[in-house]
Length: 83
Image (cartoon, rainbow, N blue to C red; front, side, top):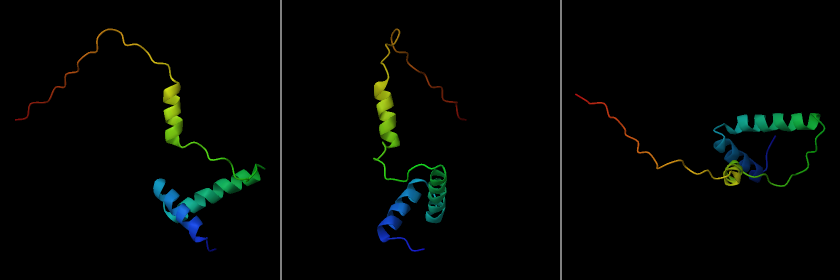
């Protein structure tokens, strides 16, 4: 099978992001697509999901702020004496 150049470059970017080979990334994505298809779910394009960074940021922003009790403590780091 020959992939269109645009699809091949997008697959290469995804593979690099996931630290996989291009062929392994293709295998994983095909497996996921087959599972979705077998479950009867639609393969229609969806609206773009939020990236992990955006989800993490929004969850942090949704948290309530807490007040610290007392003054902040200073940490002391002990270095082992080297002879």
